Image 1 (cartoon, rainbow, N blue to C red):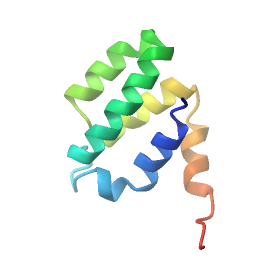
Image 2 (tube, one colour):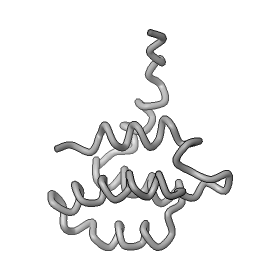
Image 3 (cartoon, rainbow, N blue to C red):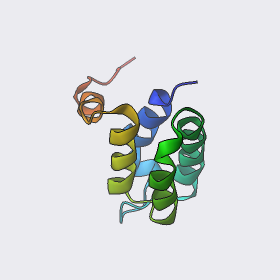
Image 4 (cartoon, rainbow, N blue to C red):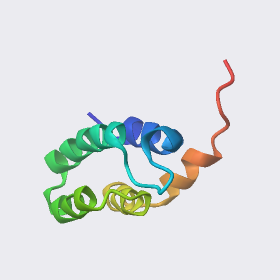
Length: 87
């Protein structure tokens, strides 16, 4: 199981998963838990990053996890440069 679809869902629908202060809400935390489980099963060295993220679930900390888990912030930029599917 890969994390990309979950990350895409979390970041492209950030207004649904984050409060106006850019902190994960309860639905965002559910998605974060799925992402964290996948990351921990594949990359145990990111456990401290996940622990910090769970304590302080801000958009900035989510982006740090994505950057470390995927090895590049280019993925994040690609998400927002993709044209929306209008079907």
